[in-house]
Image (cartoon, rainbow, N blue to C red; front, side):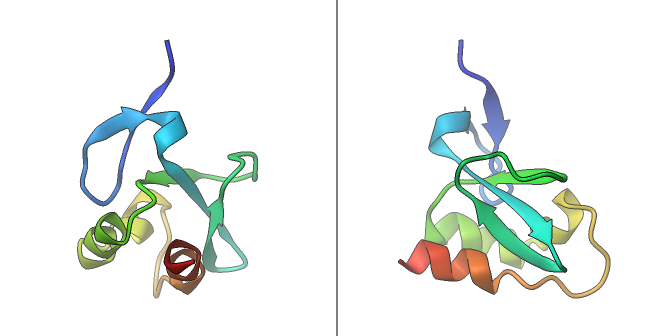
Length: 81
């Protein structure tokens, strides 16, 4: 049975393989497509809808335990292609 994770945007549970892991590196949130980068990670559906929900709900800072301003432009650029 495949592990299940919760999307920080829409809060629905999905198999790990259908979600994108994000982590903090040098005060920037970056996409971890291979899910091997060190540090605390959060999971997000790879859609702009879930990304915008997570930004609106301020879920990145809460899930990754960051204080202050959260720079998620790297993740948005990855999702835009």
